[in-house]
Amino acid sequence: MILDYTEALRIYESQDLGRVMGLGQRPGVLVVDFQLGFTDPASPIGSDMSPAIEATARLLGVARAAGVPIWYTTIGYRPDLADAGVWPLKYPRLDALNIENSSVEVDSRVAPASSDVVVSKRFASAFFGTALQPMLAVAGIDSLIVTGCTTSGCIRATVVDGMQFGYRMIVAEDCCADRDEAPHQANLFDMRTKYADVVASADICAELNARAAATSA
Image (cartoon, rainbow, N blue to C red; front, side, top):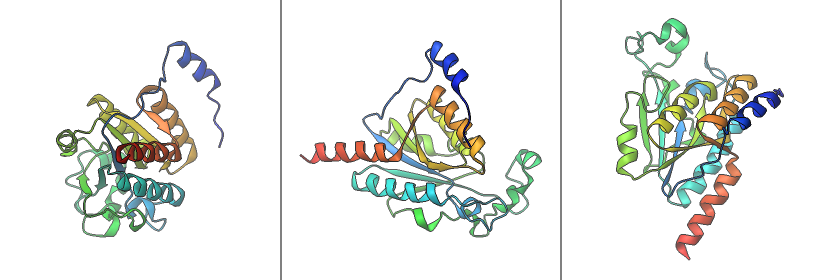
């Protein structure tokens, strides 16, 4: 689907929105909710996110080789949804993300390494009600490369919160997925102009490789 942002771009550019921040000196990677509940098409709320998962796997390989720390999030609930607040009133199929089954397992195609940290969350943002922010602070992280799903939900919420906590948020464009192309593109556009850099993973990998080479020279 091709969405026309010509007029929006004209307005935003006239108001000086959408400047590029770039990676900071100490980036990290955050893989948001690439778990079977979302990535398995057989799941009641799942879809085929293979292209984004494969791109993320490549990015993770480069990040690990460059010594960039990696965090993951997963989202899951008790079977009775007693820990989900009012969200099930809007999204009752959250019951598919049951902590007692495989829906909360990270997709094996982007499986965490032993050095990676997996953070369990209950709501959209990776920062809300979790220990992610203090972990990033202790690690000296100043920017986050974000991958995962969904672009219009947990990615966007995480990006907005991350920016508000003072991190440069870098969305790996081809490493994010949604249920449909329209909300995916609309939210990439909005994040790019207001909250984050949206960058192809190949360009992110090239910068990480260049930094690693410069450090080892």
